[in-house]
Length: 266
Length: 250
Ligand SMILES: Nc1ncnc2c1ncn2[C@@H]1O[C@H](COP(=O)(O)OP(=O)(O)O)[C@@H](O)[C@H]1O
Ligand SMILES: [Mg+2]
Image (cartoon, rainbow over all chains, first blue to last red):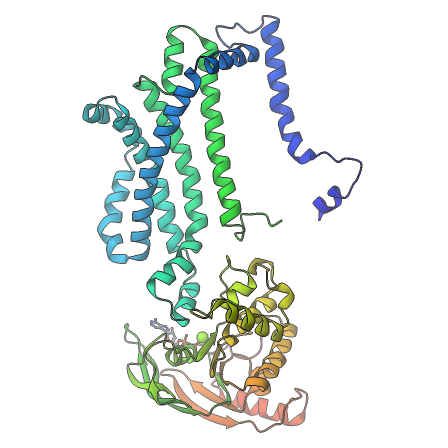
């Protein structure tokens, strides 16, 4: 009701709802720039925003930026696809089949209690420090949120809806595609959001500890040469990619589960 | 013709929910099952629907033993049970698996018209009121043109005004296609307004206690003396000892 009222006010045509949230961050950046200019912040500690922009331009022009971002994104994508695929598979399997759940859920829950980043030394021993190690860690990090949320998403479906499927003689395949999957999708997408969070976190740690390319490497390498501007740039890149991934899921939610109470109807 | 022949139902935990239920229901007849909570009404309906199985005896539709949901039987539950991700029209079409697209659309339109929801065809269930949602459920059940419609306390979750409206509405719809209606209800007035015959069940184990034919002409006036007399009689037939307090009007 209030939104319709506000939208009908003709004097303020700008979408203020979208602009206002940016006011505080923008103000902080301006403040940061001013403090750096007057010398209150040492550029060794924190470079001025303009320095970071310059670093971004420099690294874009010499191709470094895209190379490292590309490699990180590739690792993230492959790890996410594999881990998410396995998580989805077991989530669905255990969600619809009680015997499968009895057989595998206990073991999966046990492994889940190991923080996957604690495995880094072991993973380096197994795979060395090449991409396999990092992708393996991402797979582990992504698997669990997808698995858990797929599983519970399926189990939480109203049994009455499944019975509706029986009333109309749906076979197992139809039941899955018409009732179970759409019913579990909101939960699966929540799992995906979590998974993307762990995905970037895992990758940051893995690339920072042992890598010769990627955003994490860019940051660690810059640290050795005291290039604070590049370090800050790398951090911002992670934030940007994280935000991008999150927006992608939001968009996915908008197009696939508009019916769900978590979504605002337009 | 719907036969229920000597149906027993004992659950896996040993509980005997139904014992020796015998009923014959003619095509187009409106029959209500009433009885205190837990006397096996839902169980009986689920057996007729092929969603549950008797441990002895059988339900027969047109001479065939029911072993799974029958395409000519529709079911309306207490909750509308609409798929929240489907629009009203798509929910109605859920009942039309395997029918060509054109026919699906045409029949959906017809049936939505019948329940006065054509304007809401593209609406999502979460935007509907309880009464509207239940009308969609009715449309979904009707769209397959069932010979038998099973209703398990279909209006009990609705407010009194909406409930009365939908009861009249159900009769209107019934008058065109005249399917058999087998209705479970907690609401004695509802049973009296709708039914040709009322079956009173009693629990532990669930058995048929009494059958009452209701010969009042439609539309029935709840305030008429005859209606009140039948209501009193029916309440007398139910076992309303303190052990089973929740039957009469909420
Ligand atoms: N799956 C089941 N296992 C064991 N007992 C059940 C099961 N389903 C229903 N019952 C019992 O059977 C009795 C009849 O249930 P129901 O048919 O739902 O009663 P009504 O619809 O008349 O209230 C109740 O006492 C209930 O507790
Ligand atoms: Mg019941």
